[in-house]
Image (cartoon, rainbow, N blue to C red; front, top):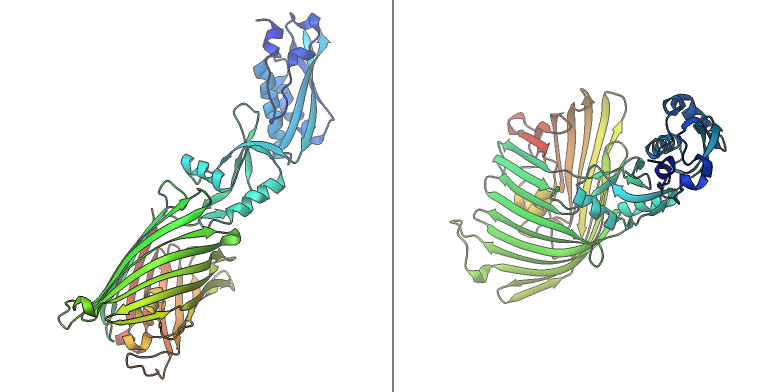
Length: 499
């Protein structure tokens, strides 16, 4: 094949205009076989000089064919990319050097932008990467630091995504553009956790346990299934199933549904259903609208349900604004929730209406004093502003207590406001294992017992010791609640892992 025909094929570099080598060849060289004798760049710079010093010998003497020239351009583009120039225009020109040999002159222009044709992210599947492009409002075009910063800000709207590090460029197969590798990962992974313990005394004495399964890798970002089973004491069982999905039409929003039941022998059976939507905003904030239904059926002394007329039915609609978990340096996070919920409660011929406003805050922080010692602080608080709607034992128990406040009687846990706290000194045995002691408490404000009398002692402390292994994949703890005696200590074992 004639040399001119070989060199007349257009090729591209970094998304700019194509250059035909045949257009710059002299007519009398079109039938002449020649090899490359020299390669130089205009203007010359340190990046090109460094590349030429180590790479020119591998190209010297090679025939000036399309494949060879493309290899030179690709190799040089990598050199500029590694040295801080993600964008480069390289225009080639072949000049005669005599005796069947030629020189290759390269005109190099560098800048801060690059033409990006695709986004890619190794932490997500192919289908999820396409979804990422829509979530981040990505369109092919020239990208510089401002466009990348825009992608980062849009990623922060979605609580499932974590941006860690800087994006990287990867060449496209035809050298005409680049793929932008985003430093995104999932905030959560599929997890299974279970635990059980034993409380020898108190109103909740006996074996208690829990099991939770969280599935987030379901082929779509934002799709999640949560299953929770809890047996807080010998008389109580709870079961909850929640499904969440993410949609981009006509705008980004989440839809969720939750079914749960709580059964307390000789007291009541509770069933609840919730559904709603929420919209993400900048900085990890979300605003949502939800509907709810709850039915509480009293139990008779034989643990059988009473008549339907004794059941309490509750309907509600509410709005919620929340700031999702904001990760802090080292180990820690904080989150804020405000909820306005209008309830209508039906019991026999009575109707009770109200709009309890609820504010919740949780935070955690780890402070390192030395390679071996640190302290972990954790707190959670909630408040309602309509006294007719109190927090119940189930509200408090499943939200925390951090383990050692188990064992207090049920009537001690009705409140309008409560605060849970924990202080945990840790002695580190390695990167993933540590021994710990803890002091935790529950403080109840405007608390009432089942007879409507104010509880004289709203402060409920607890303490204990434990060991954690494998970054909390195994936790064994021994704590005290209401009674600080060894024989009344609570033993608890928890195992967790990722799928």
